[in-house]
Length: 382
Image (cartoon, rainbow, N blue to C red; front, side, top):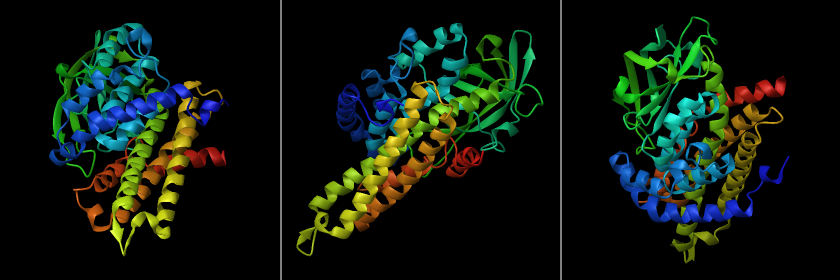
């Protein structure tokens, strides 16, 4: 194992500091209003473009920066520290394009990845269905071959960036085999992707989540990702490599809550002394910071395993651990930080209640803690 499994190098630390200042100056000012209105912040997205963060996660051959997943996790954390919705803006196109990066043809990569890098295009990931969430192999969306095209019928739910993205990576059934009968496609929105519903949610309100539908949507075979029947393997391969960055998002939300609570405690006076002098409250913060640091280290280790191409075959377990532990920590820490602010923490005049609401989704999307524990237990028990 390399040192990077456990700590950042000097260049990454310097980059983190730059991204933190950027997030505080350019993203944080939009966070509360975005949460209040529930509208997608194009100002925040344009700031990501100007900072060239839309290109960070992609191969240099196609216009990207070629950053390691550890570095991508640093960015996800720093954005989430001030605005979880913007952090999701940064992460979602990478999730959608990971199947193309790892399994797509050179022609498919050449046509679409440069558009993602510039921010001209955004991509969503279409896997879950109403009766196929954690059990994705139960999907019923179907693609039928028609000459050089495929005709897709069905619907997908919980689609991040629904209606904003112009590209959708869609998994559809191409035969009745439960696992080997699924194929992946990259679908342009204007080919017939209908947004049926946009959800009203507890948190990450600046990131739309919706239901998309396909009614005889025609997709060229050139936009097939990987081989026919390889879709389930592609989906699982993708989630293994994406879950650690959801862990990074959870770490960022939790760290943001701690940082705000500590600042508040240094200013808030009761019984003639600041809250920061109360040992019982100090220990709450100390426990929270220990948990966040443990989660951060596990996230870095999982990301470094991706960067090293999983040499020891431990990524599925590490990714599950990182995502599960970090999301559980985020929920506990943000709840405790609301408590540290007392009644003020319960109001939307202060950001910790937003962070608590935003933290919850990290325990749900890309696999619940219960699913992650199943993955971990399977490894432990062999």
